Length: 188
Image (cartoon, rainbow, N blue to C red; front, top):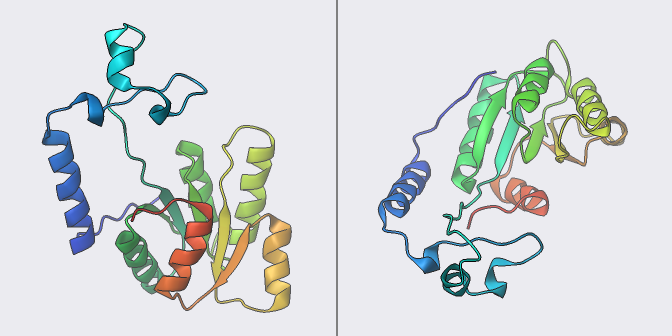
């Protein structure tokens, strides 16, 4: 598995914001704890703390993690830059075998899967991931085909393999953002 870190202005701004947030002094309003089955806004955090019912823990803003499975270096750069501009965390796998390994280490929130790749293609990789999920050994997550193959038979093959959606290249930022937004909560 290859990991790529982009140093774009969007990432730098997000990192600066995260560092500033970590350096701020915590207050009861910036901390929360929810007992199972309760929403954080359903009770006053400072009231529960005063009653000894809870210990204050810092909240963690979650940023979705997308696994991009793509073998073409140019497509990798374009997709990774788009994902960085959306503010999501991204991991990269160059083929289906690397994607299986990456998902086994840590399940992503979403997978963008190319179809035609050397070693193991996206259809076979998706079938294997869905088998692991059905067996309960891998958490469920959406898998979106991201391919140049746009025929009805290609879409059908993607769906039969277990993909949730079939997106076609070339990538369009707005379209990709809209499709991803259907499956994961994207940062504002």
